[in-house]
Figure 1 (cartoon, one colour):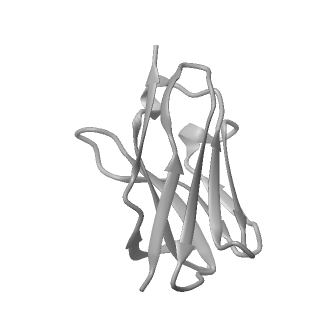
Figure 2 (figure 1 turned 135 degrees about the vertical axis):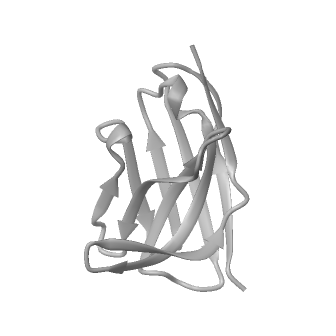
Figure 3 (figure 1 turned 45 degrees about the horizontal axis):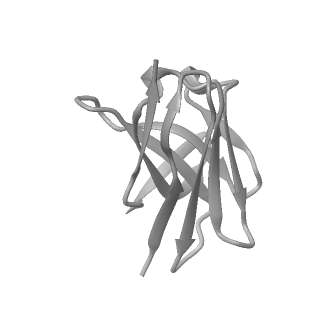
Length: 119
């Protein structure tokens, strides 16, 4: 049984930093990702990373967020710097595959962790 357990998140002032972690058990996947969902908005992919360490980011977080992974621990991380109020959302860990240029999500999700950025 695949399980994803996130940790981290919380409340921070604009310009601050937070770090998220996600531990995956039950299987290994060649790609991992972070998504977020703000109130009233669709879930969007924030960042993804392949088993080889190749990364992709949505434009709004480029230069501020860094995704990384520890293949030995089967964990993925998201370091978030220079946070903005518009980064406020529930952040979800996800696993999937890289097919060509695309990240293909599998239907395995963590429970979500709240990130709130105040002005």
